[in-house]
Length: 353
Image (cartoon, rainbow, N blue to C red; front, top):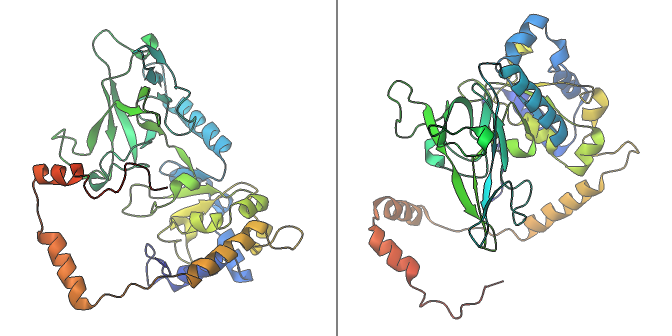
């Protein structure tokens, strides 16, 4: 599939669309740099900054500043009457022995083996696509309403909560609370290791006052979206060289950048000293004036893909017939299970790779 159009931005905003096209190619003009620098958070009034910070999600190029920001915001949110709960995963080995923490068979960053939260904390679904059609996909952002434990249990004794109630603005599934239709009880989930010998029970939530650019891909930001505005720390020029296209990923999350007269309504702002003229003047070249090696490798890969592109040929009549079949075809669960269980098509029980 060859993606050539920007779909989340307003088609009438020609200036933004042309800017995105040039940033995507890595070749920005002097006017582009001026426009991008007008989105520097430091150019706003203190009143505007405070207003935006209250509703913004921070996005960082690196994990460590993201982690620090999340913990600082958690400290601001907690209080004596709203303590922080440190919820550790519970692993079970082959003998049935249970212990706190992560099994060595799970990679450190795969799942949240420790979740630190309190009421009012901004969180995201992690390690699970709970129900994407209801708005509960991996990365969905919400706010903690309450942490529910069985009577007599609490996080200090190492037990897991029954569930955590989260307010998800984008939720569109069955209503759990009539008075609060966006509240969702997030339960403890279990997952087997790749070897299938041990299991980990964990809460599929992590702090989301801030996220990294890599985990923010696919998100839309702006009016009418769960996240109305982002404040981005774009990382250094060298970091862009190691992750070609990162700045484009940041910028293309926004649905708009305000107007030429008033950028304060933009869905994206940049901050820190990393956001400077040199950082965004030419996104393909290093400080030595030479093209980054990863940019060269990416270009080579794109040429290969274009050369081996497979054009699907299907008539309008065939397309219409296929859509009609997909829409009208219904089978029972029993029939589906029989199809899944039918292994007669296999030539062997070996893996095909």
